Length: 188
Length: 175
Image 1 (spheres, each protein chain N blue to C red):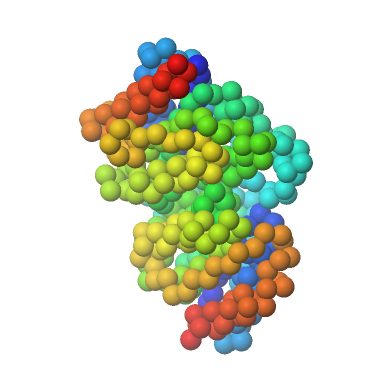
Image 2 (cartoon, helix red, strand yellow; image 1 turned 90 degrees about the horizontal axis):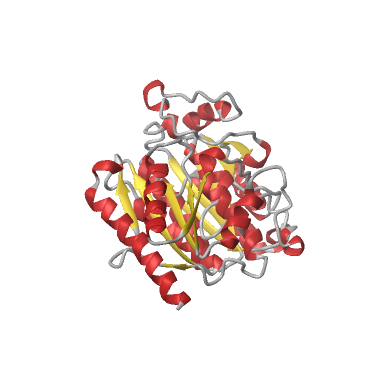
């Protein structure tokens, strides 16, 4: 089974990407095939609201990486979304990807019944991470993805620098483990 | 009084129509107005380099540069957005991410919020809530909120009640 993780930070090798690597390494150790999508390395334009996806069942914009990322998400059993906290929401890079995801929704809800988790990093302990989590969960619900948590709250919530955030790392680990456990249970 | 309206829609649709009608009301009261359509601006993504925290400006040489001055000069900023996935559009989110160089300098300004959407009141509220949070982060004062349900680009113009509310809100926020 495959878990695809998307990191929404523009910063290479910083907190969000480190968190993504940690999350995917846990999934790997649980026996999953993993794929990392780092938006710092990708180009995803904004949705043009052209509505062509209603008939095309994919996005009409072919000059960026979106349709390839959509393909990876469609192939996944589990989806991990990692975002930094920018003004109390996901980064604009990730919001661009979310908005373009309308084309996946219009492909007969192609992400329906997949399981997902959110992992959010902020620079302040009280930086608004849970608002970002809500944006991620909203996107998942609207896509028909089933969001799961860390077994007690809303998923992975960390404060930078993540290496020394023991509590945050625990929420990350528990969230990924739960995602793996659910996927294994569903497969049975 | 200077009123700056920022339209976060990628198309010429309901959000723009609502903002234009609101600005008609503002104009009637004699205030200066400017409408910025983000769909027509080339604004790159924030790189998260955070150099702006030291130099108080952005290293990126794009059309955002001309908007920093407008933000700082405005007494009232009106944000308009359609609702995408229960929040504002990526286009507007990018504009807001790029305001980081003027973080702290919007304090005390007034804000009005105009959002439309097609998935019901609760969904639209998600976009409104984001902008209210942004106002709180910046210590701006939200003095007016207007929401409407619409889907097709020309729909709202035919909605006389909403158009009249937009005009009325425009007059009210500059009183």
